[in-house]
Every structure is written in C-alpha cells, then in structure tokens.
Amino acid sequence: LADLGVRDVKMYDVSATHPSFIVSECFRASHLVFLSTTYNAGMFVNMENLVHDIVNHNLQNRTIALVENGSWAPCAAKKMHTLLDTMKDLTVLEQTVTIRSAVKPGDESALLALADAVHQA
Image (cartoon, rainbow, N blue to C red):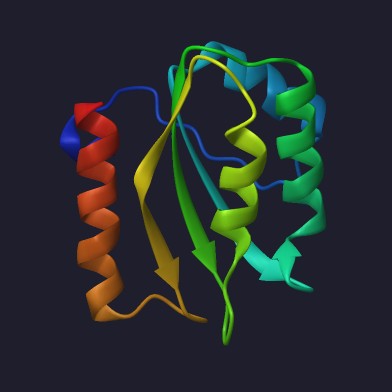
C-alpha cells in the first residue's frame, strides 16, 4: 500500500498489541486489511476477539480487505466476512487472498491486486 502512495500505513500484531489500541486505530483509519491464519477451523483466537470487538463497537463507514492463511482448509476470511457482514455501512471487499502456509510467487500478484483494490476503494 505504501508503494502505491498510501500514506500513514500502520500494521499491528494481534498477539503483541492490546486489542483496545487496535480498535481505536480502526476508528482512525478509513481502510483496513485484516489478515488471519485459520486456527481450529476458524480464525486465530486473538483475531476473532478483535473482530468481535469491532462488531460490538459498531464500526461504520470503512472499507475492509481480508487475507487468510491455512495449510489445508483455510477459512479465516469466510469467518471474518460472516461477522463483518452483520454490520451496516461497512464495505468488505469481495476479493480476498488465500495463502497456503507461506507466500508463494503467485500469492504476491494476488496481494498486489488486493492492495490496488484497497487503494482504489
């Protein structure tokens, strides 16, 4: 996103940053990208808690992009999408990126396309 000219790009690790700080940052930003690994056929627990917090705080008027990772049955993006779809005035981009275990050359082009979609939204 920074390479596309987006200023003030920030990235947070839900395992290392208190969720209240991330929620407050979500209210500051107009565009959000959530990345989660699939964990026990769902979202990574810390990410799931964050998404629930965002839903409970009724975040509105944002554009959100989703990226998931999983080795054999990635489903984190679907789980995030299901929760975020309950909110009004929130746009979740249909285009998602699925990474299987590690970023591969084909994934890079998909990530760049998603960054472009976020930038254009």
